Length: 88
Image (cartoon, rainbow, N blue to C red; front, side, top):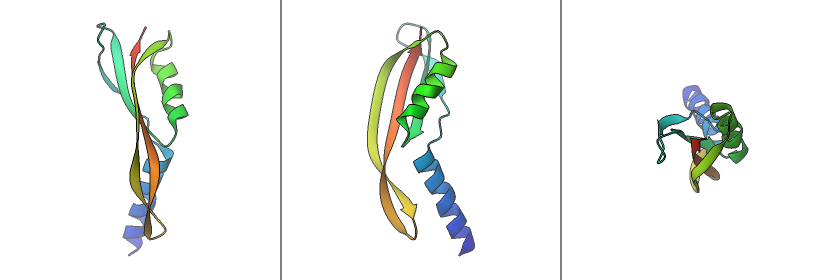
């Protein structure tokens, strides 16, 4: 039972806290581009975007949706943000 509680806490932290690990690809203009998931913190994506594109970036796509997350033995809902950018 303790393992389930620990797993629930880790899952909750990942969903609510957000994990910003950008996935690199070539953008529509041939420049480096990145897609990232921000959890419930859209500002975390903008902060990471500034780091991976220090000379600025164009937003290719910004999306959000609601996801379920375990919380205290029940399920709750939280916002999930995604951001795709192309470096300048």
